[in-house]
Image (cartoon, rainbow, N blue to C red; front, side):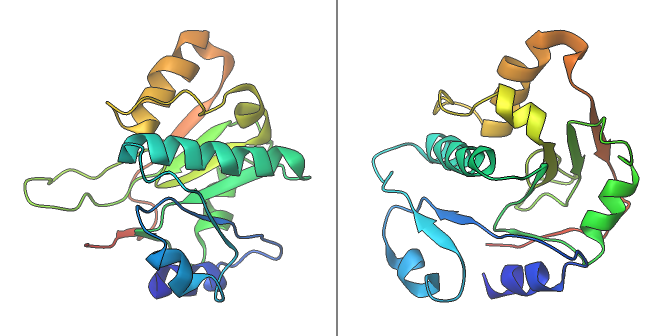
Length: 175
């Protein structure tokens, strides 16, 4: 977690607000980090891990919509981004037309040779998250795959997405 916080602090962006959501089965993580980061604990220990992720993302989505934010820069807790990540990603979206901009990162674990893409390092437009929630994310699939295939894709070309591959040295923490 300290590596993630250090990467966040190093982001080369003038204004940023951090919100971490702890959806762990126990309060240990929250208790350890509550005085070092803006973190909220959701009591979801009886939910499947995929469902906990979806509900946590829904909580963040609600916070974004309650504020005056144009974008949500989502970086999962096991993904470390270089300082220039946000500036580089936004170069590909100068007019704000891209609703979901993501960057790949290495997969982790034995047997995973291909890079991953998805929510791990993503920039969501306010419009995209205002019109698409995470509240009904099921337990039996990954949150990002489910969201894309069940919320976004059925709407046709209503949203613009772009995946960046290999532009930045995004890392995936082994754990």
